[in-house]
Length: 135
Image (cartoon, rainbow, N blue to C red; front, side, top):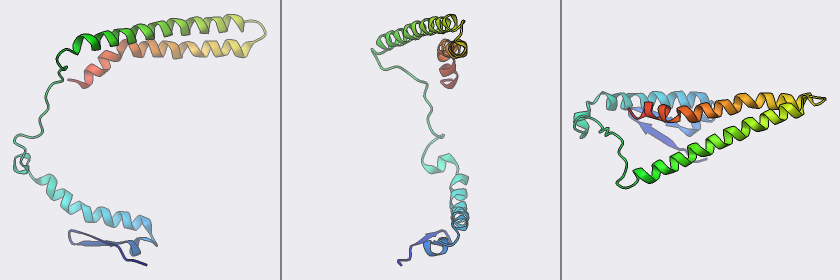
């Protein structure tokens, strides 16, 4: 069997040692990686060659795409509203049809209403949710 050895810092980790106890191999690998990673994280950003840290510019639409993207988003909102109205109508129809002698069909309609309302609510607040992450 070929012996594979990984040398990190001053620690050694070999495949032969890990075959009997895989949990110990991960622990020893973690301990071996700890010192070099800790040294790297202790270096200030200016010494790594990045002046002042990593840049974080504000989002900006490419020129000429704002109008078409807004149109596509508006079409998506309209589609969600159409699907929501259709979903509520289907749920109501299931409840009406299942009123007599088809209790499970009516229950399916009733349990569909919160899902439709949840989808509509998510669509209504989608831009606000995304806006939180763009600040």
